[in-house]
Amino acid sequence: MKYFLDTANVDEIKQAAQLGIIDGVTTNPSLIAKEGRNFEEVIKEITAIVDGPISAEVIATKADEMVTEARPLAKLHPNIVIKIPMTADGIRATSILSKEGIAVNVTLVFSATQALAAAKAGAAFVSPFIGRIDDMGADGMEVVKEIMTIFKQYDYQTQVIAASIRTRNHIKMAALAQADIATLPYKVLMDSLKHPLTDLGIEKFLADWEKVSNK
Ligand code: E4P
Image 1 (cartoon, rainbow, N blue to C red):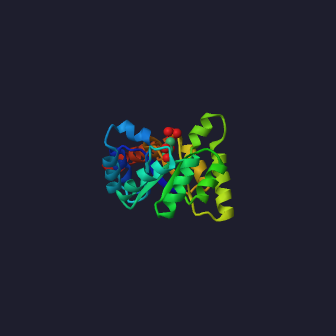
Image 2 (image 1 turned 90 degrees about the horizontal axis):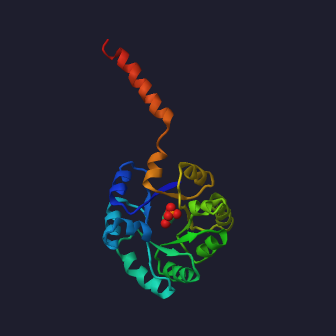
Image 3 (image 1 turned 180 degrees about the horizontal axis):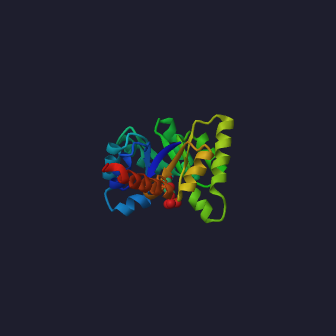
């Protein structure tokens, strides 16, 4: 499973990239707004750090406006993926952009039928929002499993990004569901590297080593 970083914070991206396990980055308008910086400037900086798909989301809600906004964004760097919200207009825009060879990540996906429409429109990626589905008392991971089954059954090449990931358990469950990608907030990524027994183990190894190191 590929790991994308779900942030627009350049410092976090730099730190995470040093691990050597980051395959791409996803941003959204909320994440960009949090940084309080120029959108294109941030996106360009990210492309210089991570060599993989970098999702940048359009703000427009009408299909023709989404397309107009997407085209220059896509020209910023060959790795840019245009994030389009999952609406009827979004599907129209995805069909147009995909035919032009522009990679689209259909976002705000909450059901298998939404994902199926995105795949049919030629989306390169779909992003089901696990955490937000869980928040409503349903099972977000079930939606990922359904999408994986349908895409495999019909051999769709659209890659599934498990998004709105909140915990390390979400990462594990996404991998077990065979999601192509999980997009991770920096904190969740770093948490997923830790285990209390690892820390205790290191402490014990070092203490034991200390006992004999002066001999
Ligand atoms: C990524 O593509 C999504 O925008 C992001 O994962 C949403 O996460 P949230 O539900 O925690 O805002």
